[in-house]
Image: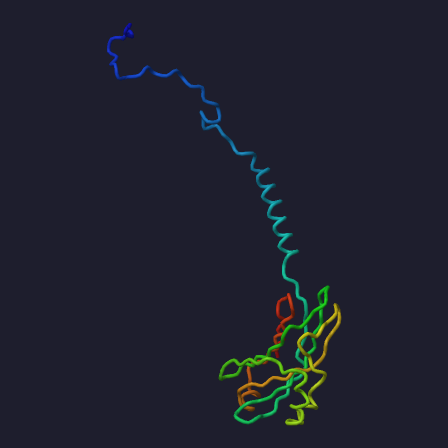
Length: 190
């Protein structure tokens, strides 16, 4: 068996030096460049405009608007008041609005109190106990009422709050929160 020839000064552990590898120009030099800034800016501007248009079109649209026309309260026993609230509610959306539930909220110096609107079948019983409520009440608004697009619903709601008559009359605000199915609640405040 023949032994490989050695050159003087080369140790047997060193491997021969590999041949020069060809490296592509993009990797070999620092000459890589970005596309022109005008093109990059134009593309970014188009992307931002597209995001803005989509955000504008997908923003939540109001489905209903309304107002509180009148608030009337009568004193009850044990520092409570029963109040009737006349409201207008208009469906400004493009599809029917179905009322799921209605809540009332009163804010006084003593705090914030909420109540669910009384059922329409209970109105005659309340009128028998508190006849003054009848004068300030219209057709009851109830859960499952339907408001067609571009129509207005006018009616009354009855709430009971655990505050005195004077505290109620000196309230900071009174709100009615109407929660329709599959849409954001509508809050009317006076």
